[in-house]
Structures are given as C-alpha cells and as structure tokens.
Image (cartoon, rainbow, N blue to C red; front, side, top):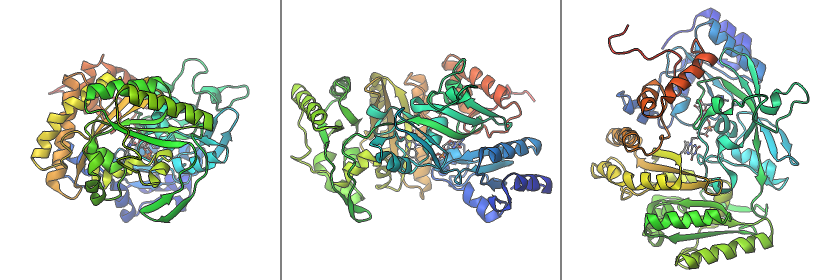
Length: 529
Ligand SMILES: Cc1cc2nc3c(=O)[nH]c(=O)nc-3n(C[C@H](O)[C@H](O)[C@H](O)COP(=O)(O)OP(=O)(O)OC[C@H]3O[C@@H](n4cnc5c(N)ncnc54)[C@H](O)[C@@H]3O)c2cc1C
C-alpha cells in the first residue's frame, strides 16, 4: 500500500475536517472489499479474492465546496479519486495505488420535491426507498434501478446504467435526469441544464443552455466516477401507481403486506421466445403495464421466494419456459379496470393462461416488492452470489437474440459445475418506456467462496463479451476500462476515440480513477515505450 506524505494528509484534513478523513489501515481495507470484486480480479488474471488495491485515504465531505477542495488537493498531490454513493459493487473500488475514496454518505438530503413540475432534487446518499417514502406523501413515485431500493438514485442517474423492474412505466435513470451539479475532476463546479441559466436558474431541465452535455456526462452506462463527482441532481418523478396505503406486519424475511387497491399481477408461460416477443410487444404497445418482465421458470420461482427451499417448492411456475410477469396498476378504479380489461383481452387473443390466482398465489409481500423495485435481491438466495454476464439495452429483437445465443454458452459453465443449473435460461428482460427500448441481463448464480465457481463466472463473462462483439449482439453492460474500450471501439464506429477525447478535455492529468471508464492517454502500441 502506498503511504501518503504528510502534506497530502494535512491538505485532506484541511478540506473536510479531521473527523471526516481516515488513514487507518483497518478502515482502508474495509473499503478495498466489495461484492463482485472476486470476479473482476479473476477476469484480470488476478487472485479471485473480493479485495482491490486499498485506497490511501477515505474522505467524507458534506458539501459541494468540500468535494471541490478534495479534488483540488488530489491534483496538487498527484492523487486519484473514486467517488461512491452507497458503494455497492466492484465499480466503486480503486484501480490505482494512489487513489482516495470519496465516500458521499454525509450528503444524504432530499433538497426539494416539486409536486407541480414533477421532479425531486437529491444528494448522493439518498436511496430509492428514502425518496419513495417521501414522495408517497404527495401521491408520487420515483424510478429505481434493478439493484434495488437501497441504492443511490443520484449514482444511477448520473454515473451508471439505470434500468429497473418498473422501467415500462418509469423509464431508465439516464432518461430521468434533469438539472445536475457536477464537480469536474480539477475541482471546477459545472451546472447542467436549466440549473446553469444565469437568470432564474432551476432544476427542471437537463439540457442546455446551448448544446446538451447529458450524453457527455453519462452516455449509456455512465462514467462510474471517471469524469468527476456529482453532488446534486434533479430527477423526474411519476404519479404513484396505485393506492398509497402501506401496511406491513410480520418478521424478516416473512413479512406480510396488505395489498393496496389497484394492483394485480399476471403471469403466463409463452412457451417460445418468438411468442414471448409478440406478447411483450403487444402489452407494451397498449401502454398498460406498471412492470412487464420476461423471466425464466427458475427466475420466476426465485422472484417469489425467500430461500432455496422456496424456489424448489414452486414447481408450477419453475416449469414455465418463457414466463412473462406483468403488474397492472391504476390510479383510479376506472383506470385499473380499463387496464385489466385490456390485459384480459390480450391473454385471450394470445391464448395464454394466467397462473396468478389459479395455479399460483404470490406471497403478499411481492406486491410491496413490485412497488418498491425489490426483486433484484432474490437473485442472491440460491447460491449467495449473482453476476450479470450479458446485458444490453436494445430492441426487443436483439434482446431475444442475446437470450437464445446465451443458452449454449452458459450451459458450458453449468456442465463444468461452476454456476448453478438454470438450464442456461435465466435472464431478466424488461421493456423500457412502453417498449421503446428493452433491457436484457443474463445472470449467473455462483458461490462467492468457491474458486472454481468464481473462475467459471469470470470465464463466462469474458466469453459473453466476445460473443456479443463478434455476433453483433449489442454493447454489453460491463465494457469498462481502457482494455475493453480499445477492444470494442474499432468494431463500433471507433467510439473509444471520442470517449478518450472527452476524458482528455475534462481530466487531462487523469485525477478521476479511469479504471471503469477510460484514460486520457493513447494506448501504447506493442513495443512502444
Ligand atoms: C445485485 C445488483 C443488481 C444490479 N442491478 C442493476 C440493474 O438492474 N440496473 C442498473 O441500472 N444497475 C444495476 N446494478 C448496478 C447499480 O446500478 C448501481 O449499483 C446503482 O445504480 C448505483 O447506486 P449505488 O448507490 O450502488 O452507487 P455506487 O455503487 O456508489 O456507484 C455506482 C458507480 O458510480 C460512481 N459514483 C457513485 N456516486 C458518484 C458520484 N456522486 N459522482 C461520481 N461518480 C459516482 C461509483 O464510483 C460507481 O462506479 C446492480 C447492482 C447490484 C449490486
């Protein structure tokens, strides 16, 4: 581990105050740990342990001014930084040994809820659950990424991906972001959208003044702290989908939820992917769903279970080949009734059998999980570890191609007993914005404590990337860092050259850790020094 000199230490203390900075080795090691780091290490030919290089310091700023001061300190003392909001996942870890962690947990305020103009202004450590609870008081709701209600909405909006289970009706994070406060890598504060107006600045718009920088800010999947620190953001909010009654009883993990008025699940087996595609298109064209996901039988059983035994018990739904799970909701009885009638019509038109209420009764808590976007955690119950290998935000046709092409590849790793046997079929696909786009993720369930299993997932991820590249199956989720961008770029209109130019302009001396983004320098050719 690199040691910080005393001048750098003093400067960091000066930036955030003594009690908000740590150089303690035990603390730094904790920040070196992350879920999924073992797979990333294995993919890079390192020991498959869940630790990265530890940071040289951790700072906890409370204001934008402090963040800016920290970044200026990094520049002056030749340090890099990695910002984290809730810090879940290996994309939060340093890739350099001169890196500090900027832990934003003290910036946890909801600054504004604009009920009339349907947006909320939040700081980095505001979770989806926190904002949703406040919005419910106004009859409103927010979009959350599939990671769950515990993660940061700001991080998802500004810096990383963004599809979630309610994407059909609430979009994806990159589309919901409005005004942004952004501290550039060298410490300068940039205000995007209507927040940057000199007269009456406000948060309601993410574009302009002048050309929009939203694409530069996050593109499709975000810069993952590679282009500065976002300190405040406005995001769109939506009408709450059903009645806001919320009554929970019981104990963890077997809570009971009093199903509120105007929400119902529908689930049916489409048997074949082609039919699944047609059904999903039709449901989304009708603009009736709150949530509309294509799963596998195994995935459907896991969605409604809290344990491996629970999954095994659900033979009726686990047997389904191409299940689609839909949540229909309504703000009023009339809207709910209309949407249900359209759903019934489509069920009959496509000769489907709705298993909900006949062959299967979902646990009541599932309705709360649908509203609170909490189905992602069920991915962990079977083996303790889950990782998305393939992942694309694309057309539905492309998502189906990925789903089918994935099966033989995944089976290779199942046969070697490195990942759980889901017959190669476990995927999660959702429509985004009423079918204008779709998201697919192919999950691998693995054992985080078993080297054989970890190396299997790593191999599966590498093979998935190669397959997606060579079979033109879209840009996968985790194309990050110089090596992968330089590998994918030449096949994809040389986008990597443009990305590198953006990094050069924003961060010429590479203060923001480029590990999950791109570095400003040109990659050296073989033999070049
Ligand atoms: C089990 C699981 C399932 C997931 N499923 C989905 C999914 O379905 N859809 C989806 O979109 N994502 C998914 N993710 C990833 C998820 O999007 C992110 O973890 C989450 O959106 C971001 O919230 P966070 O609080 O975890 O952010 P963090 O993990 O803290 O940050 C995410 C990234 O953004 C950077 N960052 C964080 N805050 C800032 C900031 N203020 N300024 C600059 N950079 C910052 C971090 O360095 C990191 O690289 C999943 C993650 C897990 C663990």
